[in-house]
Image 1 (cartoon, rainbow, N blue to C red):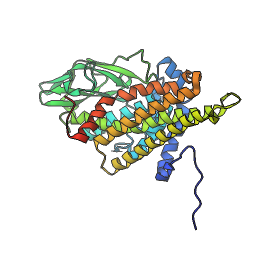
Image 2: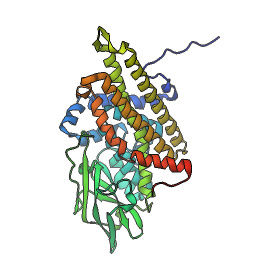
Image 3: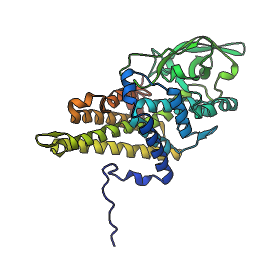
Image 4: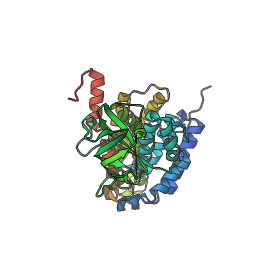
Length: 394
């Protein structure tokens, strides 16, 4: 007997949910419900005003969900799988990229750096409070003049007896002005090192960056370090060199592979709903061939991207995910997500630019996601080197 086929699900046309177990689905649905209740009703206003009010309260709520440092183990962290963390990133970015960035910087950059490279004392001091959302962290690598080339950073740290003295600037730092601790990477005589800088340290400040037209519902800051004196135990002992910050970035980029598909899904679902209800020439525009062609192409790229994210997540859980494969995922999924958002905008017509719909908000946010944590060109060159064996970076 041939088993009857399950019905076609427009929300999951490839049946990707079959790859998820009950715990995966429960985590996804919990994060989706939280975002629907705590972000979606307010995010258009936050975006319009260029602010994220109540960020500390949101962080504590996210901590109670287990979403901060979600894939890390111990120290109050949830110890979730990479796939479960990815599902959370997708749901958070379906609400807004700024919310996913808050979680990503906290867990995949700041907490990951402490968890992977910190001393046991540093882990005990910071990770439980960061996992609970009681302390927000930030990650200082990018500088005003050095983004894609962090090896040329100017921020430096020099020994002064048993202490360290830090000087420099970091730029475009998510969570910076609300962070209780900053992970700052600096040049030293022995190589690039990571330092834990509590926000109240004399000489440290984090002025917020204003006038952004992307990631407006997010806190973005500059970090200023003027003769910041730190004790010897402020340095992360577990790594020297760029492999430290680049390892953290790989972990964060993995979350972006999922998150970008959340923004794309939001725009796609909006376009489908609009196409069903918007009438022109006496019938819904979803009944016209050109509109259906757009929706079909959007669905293909959206669910291919989600399937790619699942595949990379399984590889990460198996300890087999390479940085080049993460570059593959970020390059493809962010690029396709932007195209889906732009196509959704054409289906909505003039309404596509209104904040009554999420499309333009997601599209402008993704312009930042496209270039942060590795520009398109950098990920192309990573893949180019992997494919040819030839380094084209210099």
